[in-house]
Image (cartoon, rainbow, N blue to C red; front, side, top):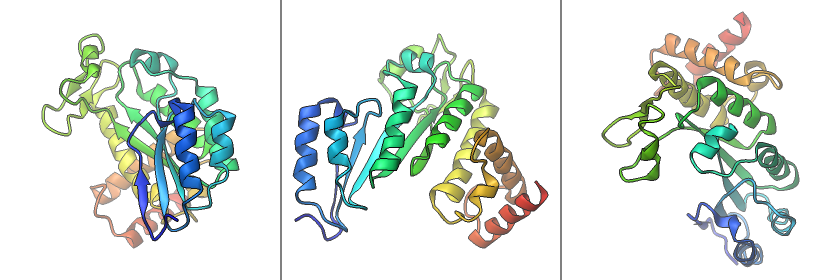
Amino acid sequence: MLGGGRSFKFLDRTFNLDYERAEQILRFFLERIKPPGYVHFEMVPSRFPDRLRTLLEQFPAGTLRLEVGIQTFTPEVARTIGRPSNPEKEQEALRFLREKTQAIVHADLIAGLPGETLESFARSFNQLWQVRPGEIQLGILKKLPGTPIARHDGPFGMHYVDQPPYEVLETGSFSRSELDEVKNFARFWELIVNRGHFEDLLPRLIPEQGNAFEAFIELSRFLLRRFGKNWGIDRSALRQALENWIVFN
């Protein structure tokens, strides 16, 4: 049996594209895993056939962690970066994982992709929020030297930091100030939502329906003004600020 806190992570970002291989690996671990051991896979959200779903449903709580790369729900942006996209199918897969499995699901969005705007990024965020994965990770596009994303630099006005981590600074459709706001949003999202310290307040901070992105970006602006930073904030002080926001908004 595999347990004792041991974890196994597969770094193949297209793990579930080869169904036969994925099925064999899942069966191998399903027959052996027990808490607190767990396995971690990165999966393509549009490729969850029934044969894999049946296996995913059988993993005990705490033994399966899935990283699901959404990046964007904007079809034209997905086509630009050569990523197959089917937003409805991807959202259905995330609902399945939430409702039918006990997997811990981490889904990501990337700001600053070629052709993405703040408005389209906000729409993708709201679509992702509606299906409630366990964690939404908001990242900023990075261009590692020699990677194919460089072909979009000219056509899409891409400008990056020339030192690690090579983050995008601005694009022809996503201004520097807008990207800075998303970075601030992402930092407070990590502190308030992903870390799970303020779950009692979330229903009053983020609407169940409607524009969750707009609600939280306003909150993140307020918090940056309040603290002058988005890191190293005392948790009790942050709670007090959130409670004040709820009272006056």
